[in-house]
Length: 548
Image: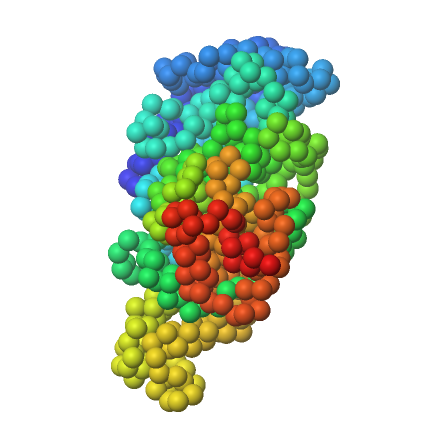
């Protein structure tokens, strides 16, 4: 066990210790958890105030010297002794807390089983729990039971935090979450905690048996085998791929859509954002209604411009209403989505972080490229990697007027073969037409495929807008470009009632009617952005494009 690279990377950030090739809790921690697992008659933990004392004792047994947030103790006491009803409190301390303590006692064995199985999941691909560092593509599979144990560690504030800043890792313990309801109480913060407490109640009564995968996705800056490259502006300008279907929902929520899709998390570069602090907008809400997402905060450092994080299988446990200050937990949610052959619930969430407070610089070419590539990184499908690589080859040669030379090159590279020679009159003979023809063949092959992955579109909304300050019209078009380049069959856009997007359906349908390619739309967006920077226009993109 001590020779496993994955374990070596994560061990400094776990509360357990490695001794004689086995993962263990220190003996004092075992005693404390056993007492808690027997209920309040043995542990005497029957209130939030005493609970925090028990948490402090466990931390002392682990020699965790880092101070917790000021007022964390008062926050635990306020929630469990005043905000929670007496009936709920009795159930929590007599049933839920003992069950969570028993789950923590199983953490070392759950980790042992995890690492034993990690080598056999994806045919030699690393899937074990580890730090997936910057500029490192990789995936981790965790059972829902192991995730439950890890999030319970967060509740008890048992994770060491000394080296987390150095590794660009987000907060993982719950001390700031509880402290905030005491220092600056708000109903939305109380209800965020209620969602997580409800999750603990659910797993204590019936532990889920599936798994969740956490994948760090990367656009490589170099031509690396088996990777997708970071496109430049010329690539987007010349892309001859048709735009995908565009649907608009003016009232629905991303997480409520019934179609199987990749759902966008409007993320902070530190995944989870303010979920464990005071944040209560789109990402934070998603993390508390699907609390298994929190586990990714343990081992996924902040994202660079060419990175995204995709999480597959996180179950939803809570219903809610409202947003930001009006957010309210309103009860249980039974997630009835089917599971795949690996036991993952068919909920795919991709975290992509937009530029924060970009102002006018969002119209600069480098910022347009950054945002489009960020979305493309999140939206690309690893199973279609060969199509992306061939597309990059096509675009690299799209200026070549010699069709036969290109056909020869692409044939050697293993590209899609056409039914007729590209040099024939019907095949067309200029570089742009060649690119269009081959890219359309990729789309057609993708549509004819029996792979269910090909039906998975993008469900998104006003990414990088709202608190981040982006232009909703600009961001919607950027995401459409990225989804189309990623060979996604559709994008479903939730406007959340944004007034500037009221004409979105008319504009997108007009563009589709005129059969624009990605390059056409990119060039038009670039021209609009240039005019915005030069103060030649101050209107939104939709009005600028279609004044009538």
